[in-house]
Amino acid sequence: MGKDQDKMTRQRLYINIDHVATLRQARRASYPDPVAAARLCEDAGADGITAHLREDRRHIQDADVTALAAGLRTPFNLEMAATEEMTRIAARLRPHQVTLVPEKRQEVTTEGGLDLHADPARLDACLAGLRAAGIRISLFIDPDARQVARAAALGVAAVELHTGTYCEHPDAPAHLGALRAAAEQAAGLGLAVHAGHGLTLANVGPVAAIPACEELNIGHSIVGHAVFVGLSEAVRAMRAAMDAARAG
Ligand code: PXP
Image (cartoon, rainbow, N blue to C red):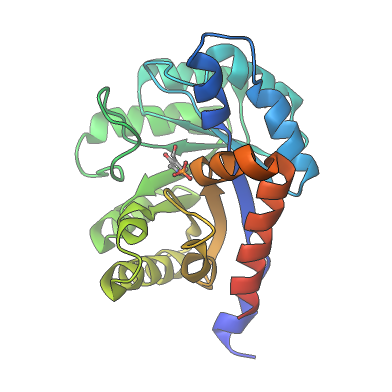
């Protein structure tokens, strides 16, 4: 069996439940509850739950992450910016994993990967705080060789490759090629490889089929699909699409 086939293990599906909270916050209502949604996702086969506590608290709120950190059966992946406030919150909650993401106030969603060369003092302080709390660290980066190399040098456990550009241009081979190359480079450097952003039932296949890619983080399209088929069915449909792609 070849090296690639060896690595075609079952890929983890982490569901990002931010947009359940978006719906709630649109009315400042008490429903729908993202924690209840997370439990449904777990029952439907999610391997973990992801939520992004933004500095502007646009969707997920502090009480949500507190409940998620305490009450999930599966690992909780907290997405956050590398700020002092967020590092303090993470150290208190001790989620299974933190994924560091860039954040801009006006953006509609996370627009690009972290630039790991941009503000080393800030990043180092955050990494030190997370390490002291014993939290697994993943860095959300563009599929770029310099960023992958820097992530490895920083000694983190994982990178999450930003699939957004591929998702905007799924038929342009260069973007998928960049993801494949970055995944291989990262795995070769001993990093766990995750991927996400913008993935849908229609475009997930080629990313799910990247052998080194262990974990996908998917949110918006699943919550959107859930409006029509329910959350459990939407999770199962994504799981099936990933498994079919990985089976070849
Ligand atoms: N991964 C990261 C790092 C993200 O910031 C997001 C969006 O919050 C996702 C994955 C999920 O993206 P989407 O909601 O487009 O599936």
